[in-house]
Length: 105
Image 1 (cartoon, rainbow, N blue to C red):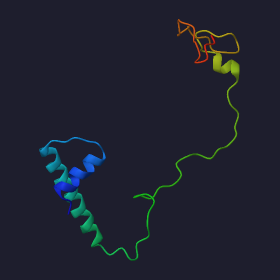
Image 2 (tube, rainbow, N blue to C red; image 1 turned 60 degrees about the vertical axis):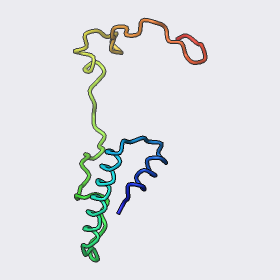
Image 3 (tube, one colour; image 1 turned 120 degrees about the vertical axis):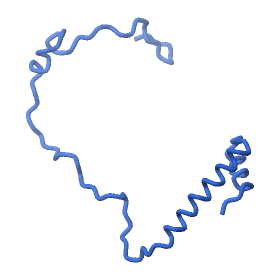
């Protein structure tokens, strides 16, 4: 069982300030959690395999198979603006970028 004094000590170590009501609430909540864990400890788990996940899962990703992609021309066909090699987009940054070392790009 966790005492109010222990919760106050943990809060002090974490440099947290709580009202008396909050400290009492945390004390009650921590004790409820520990009671639940104690109930779980009563279960016979002797023949139970440990799990890495609560439910069994299998690989949901498809096989990584190399296949033909669309051509550059096909990718740019519906682009509002392109230079036949790249998408052209409106300028977004109005001011020049100044790197931390003072260089302009």
